[in-house]
Image (tube, rainbow, N blue to C red; front, side, top):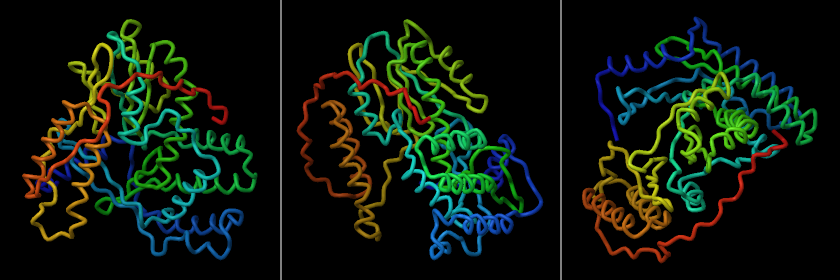
Length: 384
């Protein structure tokens, strides 16, 4: 989908984002300085980077990251979603290597994380439901720019120590952490914009660093909140959180207040079910008195437009979306009513884009699901 709007409106939205975020401008581009520091820290990392491979992790002719904004058509006032291109920055290759090394040496537990929509469906299938349970979602505001860098460094250092990582390896990894997290800047219209804190938008390591901090908070704080508010289920996909709680013991405002007091840098917004329904990822979750029904969710801006069958695109490009829609239809294990409804939408998409419509045999599965106890959340995380 393309969004076309006057340039001055786009610039106004982008400037509103910059003005309302924790940024400041500087007069000198620090890219050359950062490149010198990257070369130095790579030379000082003989344990993790063999001498003959050092060149692989130096970005030749680097430049400052650039920012652009994607319009959020489904949001009020249609603000931008910032997208920062970090690929040509001095620390890009080292940032990727840092992520790979941490994932190999000290992987995070990811006990409460969702991998994708199918993981969410499995979670919901195993969640018991009673009439007084309530669905709600929490969203973390401006996650990357609010990660406390120094505090997260201490958390990471503790993880490396508890994993008994060699001291020289620990030292080199933390040096990488320091140099990567300093490079949280980008260029816009001949200005250099710097974040006061947080991790760099667009950096390959930012997701891992954010997860390190969030999982530390979850494993140290959530057991208390879960008991206090009778939270039946808690799971998170990046900065989107699903909770199911007992409304006889708590309400969403009390839960939101406690979540907003978890850490000074973390602020949450909340949304509760409407007509017993809540949307998360591409799943519409409907609560009944005894179980949960799911369907495919599409935003109001959905246009049923894909690459037309009559276009000159390569065939494998045109059929990629069709294969995805078929696979989703078969793998989401929808009940019969929702399955037929989604099949009708699918056929309309194919028809609108001139694709031939053939018979589609539904997968064989029992629409009546047996509810089994969800595995007990592993709140204890000794390495955190």
